[in-house]
Length: 262
Image (tube, rainbow, N blue to C red; front, side, top):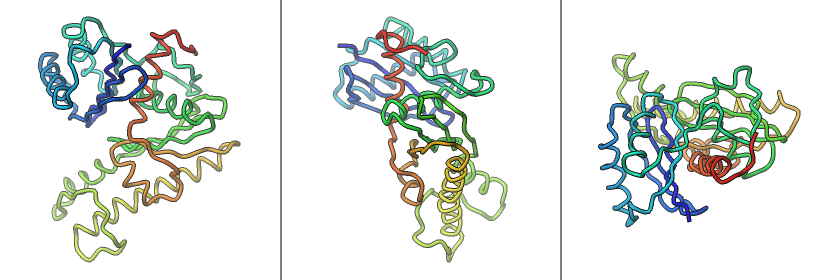
């Protein structure tokens, strides 16, 4: 039985998942650091696995999705040095099973394609995937399983940091539900604007997307803040914080396991 290490490298965080066969048995989130060496990665990954009682030596395959190109080389070196073989990298030429209708398919971030594949494989219908990462993205999949396109906006953490950095008297705040829209102090006012403002933006864009396409579209959310934002959204129907890892497993099977090709 294949034991797969799936690695999703985002601009802020890197998420790792261990699949034993078809089951996701462990997952971890670490800070993305493109300067981290392959040896440092080995120490970190081994420590995380052993904390969960997982045998390091049982890993025998890997797949990587990255929106940070400099991070790919040390990760590939890590796989070659410590796991004996390079990982499959999501990028041009990989078999996705999903036609990309973008004007230039190479411009679509790897994570967006992985999410789209996972969503369609799970629901087999038109989908809107909202990913709350460093950027917030909306990705649209047709009922025929085609990647149609989407929208990109600054992520909620970027907006919070911009307020702190560019407004001299505003503090750095935690993304948290303040309870009321009308804040009675600076921190709760900022939290209100960030949380409820972003929920409103999500709903507005999902509503506009649904009005623009000629098919019903199920809306699902992923990313570290998906549950928090979904609780304040009227358009998000379900959340799956591990959607990208599941998509990586699907793509690994399609490319190494002899699955469907595009």
